[in-house]
Length: 249
Length: 261
Ligand SMILES: Nc1ncnc2c1ncn2[C@@H]1O[C@H](COP(=O)(O)OP(=O)(O)OP(=O)(O)O)[C@@H](O)[C@H]1O
Ligand SMILES: [Mg+2]
Image (cartoon, rainbow over all chains, first blue to last red; front, side, top):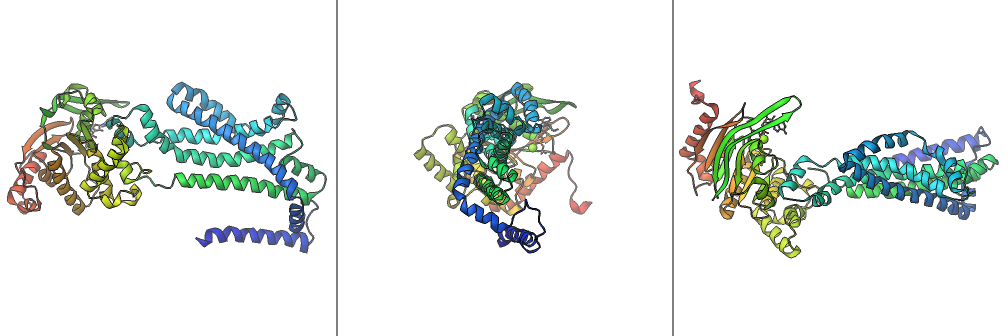
């Protein structure tokens, strides 16, 4: 058990050591790679503004995640029950999955105005949609034949079967989709900021300070970005674990 | 009234590779409270016949009655309870939740449900395990939960497809004894699919012997052990005599004794 904690911590410490060695001891690093101590200094000094920007990016990611996931659940439910809908959605989802959605940000920004966060949220939503849709649709098709027979033998109606069997069977798949979608939504919301829009958010700040040569501050913002991603990942992983605790028998 | 009446029942499955005749011309009457076993080689249509009675599949020919109704009507009226080879428990529900499933589906009130679940758990000897999840139970315990669930609506007919197939011999014999006790208490008719000749003889009033290609009934053997199905029976000569009779019917010829070979 302790290995599961100790191993990644050891890797982290080792990497930090190498970083300190290269930058502070050997002075062999390019200017864009600051010392870890400088990064931490900047982070502590600017924690207020960093959290404000982090809140904006996190909100965009979260709104996108919720909207994308809701749309995905509804459409996956339709696709699982209505064959033509499945046929219509399958190629669309495949197309969304291969197109880098963040590339659409400039288009959204010109559609909804450069001062609106909507473009970023839409990008996060579309990015989050795909993993949730794919997983939920798969989950809705995982009901075991013996369970279906059992419910039919019990005279259960369609809605009852959905509530008692289909939904609980699909739930762990939904949570897996949400866990993947959470990371994807954060990345999409953050990267979307590199393509213009309002002058706030973690991604905008990283880009600004990296360009203007303030590498330690840019890295301090990266810590903020990691914090957002990690928080969402931990929450969704815990949810996933909670619902898939019971092994099938 | 009879529990099950089958007249000339046949079932043909249509597959991509062509038609599969699973069952032909099955004519069989099962009385109320009667225990009937189906035995025969793999693929002879035992499960198919059970599924037709349960209205999980529809027969291609012949007529099938369950308590004088169509199988579909009987299913919707909850005239039968069913247990499969796999226990088929819902892994996210506790033992109590699994037993209560049919009651919940038929909107029994919560207090009545709790009382009935306690009763059923006691019947199958699982009172101490109602809060457990299926993955915390042994295979035999899971099967007992499935049997309790099948009995939940007090059906007059119990359909069982190799429910003890995956269990070790000792557990199997214990569950057989429990099943005879339960059926004599509830008075339900039973259609019981098995591969085990001793199991069929021990449990049944009649053993239906089937043969494959095409699946059909070849023999029906009476087992007159009414009220004496206890451990002593397993040792008695008349029991062995019936076992031999079923074995011979199954093989189609008198079976050689091992020492004569
Ligand atoms: N859904 C199906 N589609 C096509 N063929 C089927 C289907 N179900 C059963 N069969 C065929 O019908 C025949 C009888 O099958 P069935 O499952 O009733 O046999 P069984 O007597 O229960 O065998 P076992 O003892 O192995 O369980 C087999 O040849 C099988 O391949
Ligand atoms: Mg079978």
